[in-house]
Image 1 (tube, one colour):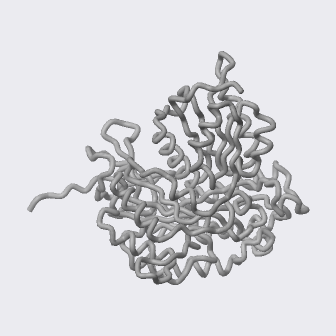
Image 2 (cartoon, rainbow, N blue to C red):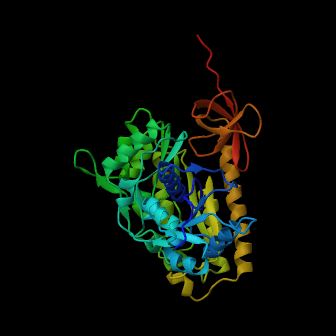
Image 3 (tube, rainbow, N blue to C red):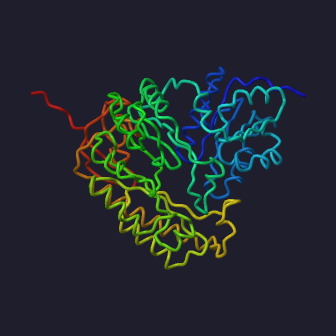
Length: 444
């Protein structure tokens, strides 16, 4: 069996959600530990890991397109590993259709990537889509570097089985990582440079565990413990499910100063019949009452959501209900998608599949409504004084960009460094960001 030279360089390309970004970073750390050198996006690497997402339309076709683009001008190609949710769902098809792919690894098995790489170098094609709960986290190397913000996966999988969604099939059942492991990883993230930590999960607010005293706690208990760490300045969490917004978590938004006033709480649609067909298990009314409870304890909270247009059977009137909900809530941010049938999900075989041109028109109208509310929210923050955590350089010299407490990108003229926390006055709002002036302390 022909052998392949051991790769010296690698590139991980992650697509989709923040959990994929987290997974991609951890795979990079695994490869770093093997002595490989990372190559920037667009550069030629000996090994390319495509860390895929199955949520978007034609996800599998896009993977094959990315694989095809990796072929070099001389006809050769790097070692290719396909990871993530498309690998989990379509691994056999990928191996059958793409002989240039050497490895297929699911999201619960990527800690075995070095072992798979050894087999690939020996000339074998390897697939690992097992779903052992929890084992990957204990096998991952210590994080050595971090920017000022970092992700921390606390929960994986989903038990909700929304009829349009593949996550329960690609990520498995809901699993909460142990409390002590999360505290330990949070300490390591801080040591690596993180000042803000975002807790991640498919249903992050479904996380449960036992604290250091053996008491049962939910996500609010974990947040309160993390807030006691002096070097953590900010805490966020995403993505939440309305059914798992507990009284304790709502109270944490009032009581934990380090918990940022931002809540991503997907609703998906603004009509009860559509929500029932989606198996969302909440109504428009219950969702609105929940938002009222959150706003009652944290009036300045910024709300974010997810929306699907063109779900099978959605009528024009039902779509209008979603637009009305958007205007009623006034989202600061949101993500919107056209419905895309995912193989193996109940919605894929439902009657009333919506024509593509109808979905296109509805998505444009939905995004216009969301843009209106986002601009309105940004404009409403003009005049506020807040802290901004600097994350990167801006477009022009002397310009830095960071996040406000409400997750807005704030453009500030400053000589501050990445990782600094600035007190600023928001001076103007735009469609996707705000502009702010640094507030300079005057001695005496």
